[in-house]
Length: 131
Image (cartoon, rainbow, N blue to C red; front, side, top):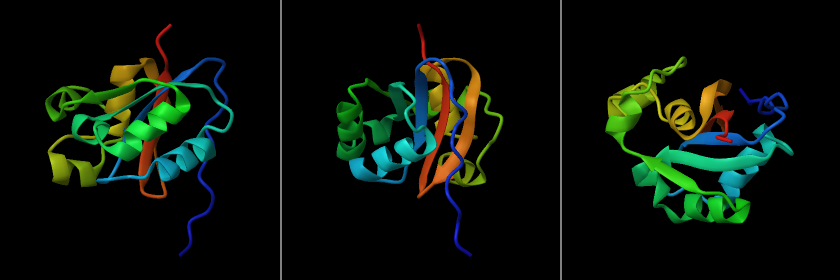
């Protein structure tokens, strides 16, 4: 069964803090393509992910191309954030309910504007960015 196009995020009048859940060694091109597909034309203020992924070249390059900071959070810190859409896969792999939503909630402000979505093996979620 072939997946259809990714759902687009509803336009938001401000910048977004985007949380990402990634497999090891993602390419910048893949990350940027997913962000463009899910958040077309939407300003992104920062990216956030698991700290072990934040050091990977593809994610660092994607943040550099966007000109935004990249925040990395430990498993322990992400585990303390309640997420509305827990992931069984993340729970099995890391013992926490989720990465993308928790990272977005830590990096941004307010509730999730875009709940967890999986596009091309990349998981994204977003909140309003600070200030």
